[in-house]
Image (cartoon, rainbow, N blue to C red; front, side, top):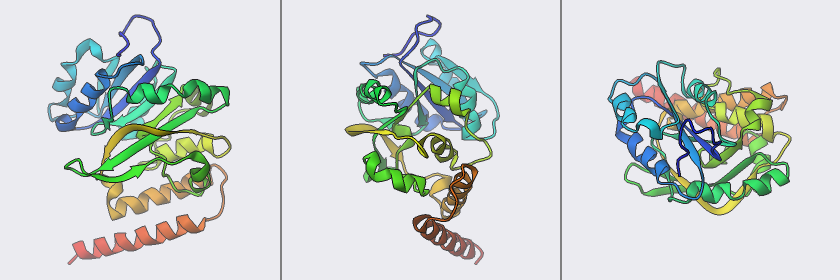
Length: 266
């Protein structure tokens, strides 16, 4: 259920969406949020100054949104930072405009484990997401137990699904906001601040959302740049060296990027 804006009652979850010229996909994402039951949530939308009718479409939701702003920004992490200044929920979730929640109980099912997490000193809770193609066909299931992902994550492999994750509000008080110098791996860099020394809680069987494949990070050049940023993030937080898995991924992405550039040059 959506928390009523302006009532002073703190919602359990704040859902932040950054969008730019995404009118064709944003409305179903918002409708899925307003259909959620079993948890009080608020929805915040940071738009980058869209010119495709997004503003008019979003404004139709009126008071159902806790906050909305549309102006040019420096990218997704800048947009998230703007929205975080208005988020009142104890927990925060970030969704893409083309992400779809798996069911009307998706957020509540994940949030049900947040009390257990806090009792264990854990401030990040995540479930399962599904990567789908443009026709909705399943490509890959994302989300495995933290005990299996912890070493990979600290070595630079981001396999925990960020849209399927709840962040305790105290993370932003303790660690600050997203670093906008990162263009692709800013979510990894932020999570590394917490997870290089602490744990996350995985909720098995909790399918949170479906994620659309594609975007700049799925191109050869985007993958290479994202991996370079992952390396920068590890260096920033004192994780030295180049783990073999990260080195292999960098080499593969770099080679694919060169091939793609060469093909375009023909």
